[in-house]
Length: 211
Length: 259
Image 1 (cartoon, chains in turn blue, purple):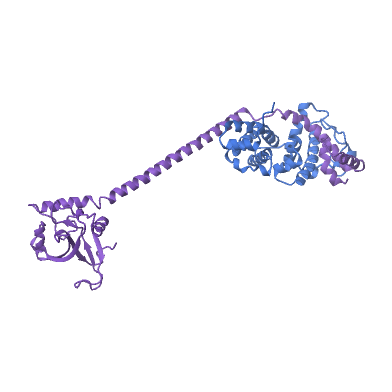
Image 2: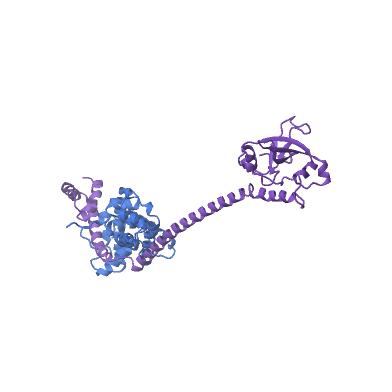
């Protein structure tokens, strides 16, 4: 017995352009959660995530010809479109959106101060941990946030993320490195602020180290 | 392996992604002697542990159903609009074609009456002129006309227009300058009931005649016109009898139009 063939994204997109509603529905259901989650993690707001998801697929409906399968996967294309929408919306609402704190990149913790096996969330409940991580991610500058969301939360490879963000793989790697250090620092700061982590001892405050 | 190479594989090591065994061994050997890279791996593993619950929670996150409904509504509206545009385009095309056909028909109708219906009316006028009622003026271009289908020269003249203008050659007429033009009317029959289309060949003779002579062919002439002289082309049949006549008028080039 032969397995039913799963139509490719390009085929579904072609059928969608020809007016096939079922093809569009399949395409939407295949990619909507990815786009929605990306927008949600990037913005921290469900309303923005909904708006972005709608805008991304509307753009796909109206300008399907803009997608070139030779340049990458449809997921990457949609992700790139979602990223542009999110950044535009965040820029528009910058006056109203207040992130947890502003990041001074120079305050990042030196990696040499970290020890293997450190678990900053060990004293938190699961829900608290989830909230803290999401808030810490939202506190990152967008260029770091987007690579972390794509590589860590959406589990793309660096190459796929590079395709979605239209930048070199090396850039993704370096941003990921820097972003992780910032994220770790944010987490520790927030945990200390909420009393979930012991304040850093004087022995650990060498140089710019915050731990 | 140096630190730069290690940075390339640190995420794969932290996530336990499949790696070439020798690369993995070399990477692990590198962190034995490099504190920074070891710390980096530690950060990656710690962050991964922190991120996992969030990823698990987000796995169930999807766009609300109303987003799909709204998108499908938009999709249907767009498709309907595309269909109506196509239908509208075909209607517009059909209407355009109809307008073109109508224009052609109107043009054809307007061109034809300029040739045939008018001579018939004028023929009737000449016929009635032979009776008691006054006929048209001899100098009028609206004198009864007769299209001669079998005579190529006359038919061409009659077919193109009722009024033709010829450039007069210099010195061809003693009274006029070289830029004078000849205006001719179409032929009209001299005998009622005469079918000129049956003539196999005809001869045209240019004559000058007094206005009073027009009375003989049934045209009502006033005293002034009777004294004037006219030029006319007389069509002679094979038997030498005059069958039709057309009048010629000379006018200044400024007043006439050339074909």
